[in-house]
Amino acid sequence: MALRTRSPALAYPWDDAVAERRFALPRPCALVPGGPLGLLACVLVALALGVVAALQPVLALAGVAGALVFAWTMAKPVRGAYLMVLLVPLVVGLGRGRFVPVLRPNEALILFLLGVAILSGTFGKTAGRVRLGPMTGVDRAFALLFIAGSLLPLVVQLFRSDKPTVEDTFQLLSLIKYYVGYRLLLAVVRDDRQMLTATKLMVAASAIVAIVGIMQYGRIFNMQEILAGLYDSGQVQQSLDVRRATSTLGVWQALADYMAVHAALCMGLLAARVPGGRGLPAPHAIRGCWRWALIGALFVAIAGALATATLTAVLALVLALGMMAAFGGYLRRAVLWAIPVTLLAAIVFWPAVQERWDYQFTSWGASGDMPVTWEYRITNLTTIFWPAVENDLLLGVAPSVSPDLAWQFPENQQMYLLYQGGLIYVAAYFIFMWVVLRASWRFLKRLDGPALAVGRAAFIAWTLMLVLGLFDTHLTMAGEADAAWTLLALATGAAARAAGEPA
Image 1 (cartoon, rainbow, N blue to C red):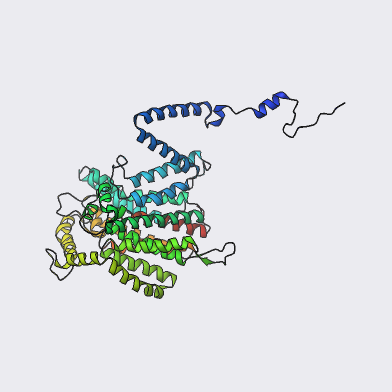
Image 2 (image 1 turned 180 degrees about the horizontal axis):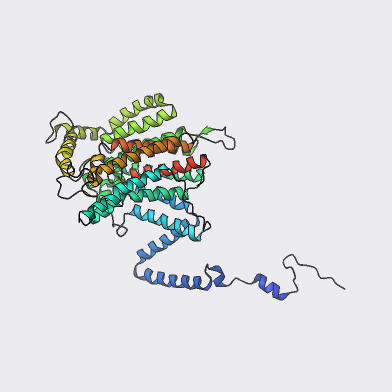
């Protein structure tokens, strides 16, 4: 009598029903999340996409691309942070409503990441376990700043029976978008590897911004014409006539500060000690292609800052690179390197230097005793803005500058805050800056390696914002403010992990 043996493929080969179930193809509904309803939704979406593709193929392509990016980001929310740090510097200068209704593209990116974080926390793998990131004194100081700079001016306007304009509304919301981006980065960047990836993308974006600015300054491939066609900023339009770079940020003062901060970040990363790997001593400096990429990014960042042809660029580079070198203990060596670099920069940018020198001391209206722009600033502050705010010192005038004023730009952070929210707003600003600088300084004691370079760059970014506020309104200036908040978020998360604090 023959014995039945088990087949390696089937547990019971003589059971035809089991074999049929084992090799049967899954039903279509089983392949789609949501079962039959999910399948029906996919069919309806496909039909709608076909109709849209026939009528508006560009819109259909954009919709498909957006859906793919959304699915790619939902699978791993930290990818949204990567997109934000990479793309924001490239689109931050684009006008409101130009490509996205009502919003600027960078604001749309923040809302996109916010939506991904909410959906991931609700339906994703971390559903029910919302991660907000570490809470520090910065959050409380920002709450005070937001109340003094957004809520209180709105209440004052309503009390005065003034209806907020569209420009007033966007000014009132200008602070909160930076804070939302800061909290989102803290929530989705969960470890030092992700922090380093975000830092690399920041450096890559800064290199692109610098190269675009250099091309704009050098009139290469008509970059100044291309930017003027995309950006509505007045300074971008002025760059058609004068050799001054605005790049994708749209404002040369913002570009100068942004480039200086990233030059300092590159310098800090080059000097950072990282854990050893296979066949490498521990710790060791960054090596290989990444090191050469950092060196290249450092030099193009310096050149991009100088291409703005502003005193802001010179001051920002001296402060940023000097502080980073002092932090690392190689200030003397940096000064020795700075001498030939300065001479080379003077030769390369001499046309812009000569142009600015002639404008400052020999142009129409210049007295020759001091730069003409300084004379304009003093006149602007004393004869235009001070008379506008002196009767409303406590609570301010309005969130946005009146179009009736002869000059719309106070070119001084404190004067602008006085105009927007009075002495209360100015006091909240100094308290906030003090808390941020103290917090970022304390982070330096906990960090090491690349994270320490990020922490130092964050401290430098906020220091520059405070110092350069004497000459321009840097607190909410596009590009540089985004970079300062991003570096602060990365440093805050790294410091919390280093201290073993709960996230």
